[in-house]
Image 1 (cartoon, one colour):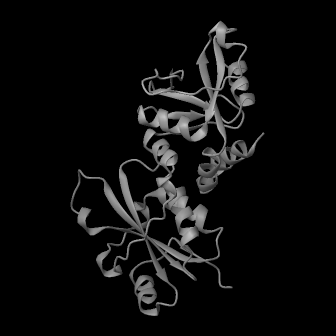
Image 2: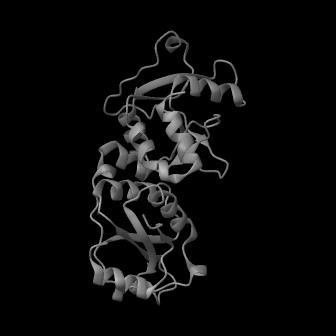
Image 3: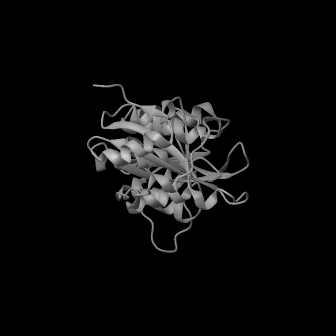
Length: 260
């Protein structure tokens, strides 16, 4: 079991592990299924592609009928998949390419990838947009949190919280002492629009503000993001006593750290 396997298993337990998974995904090489060709059977499976080359990866159908491309953290995981599935002898070969190249090709062709399909590590579907962002490195660029005034945000009844989003945020921030409290609000532009996706703002009280941790939080929240909603992140320094007081007066936080 390698570092990518362990990162995948961590994400299966909690999406707070997404940042480490992303970093491991772009390292080294990834394996994938190739249609069996006798002339390739004695090679090492490593491939290089030229412009105009045909799409090299085997495409399979997922349980929901969607076409996906299985990729694997190692040849051992690929072999595990073949042993556990309804595959015939000499149906597939193991191909290997640099991870970034694999992610880029699959993503630009519009296919989702399934990491470690049918393996004991668990599997994870990665949408094509995420594959492209991983391949070009844009996902690792730090996004600046928004500075929305608390008076411009609409409070929510806890029963109306976006549960998946709030749970993901909670799982991440409870592991980092810099987060002192967190709220979720509805952005006002969408308060009266029933057809558009609901837009939320997560506001985090931090002491001190840590841009690296905030960036990792953003990565964790955007791994297979909840459908039908959009969200932004905002941050308030605990030293900003007026803004802090306004937030606590406006709504109860969904997370509040214990006093040190």
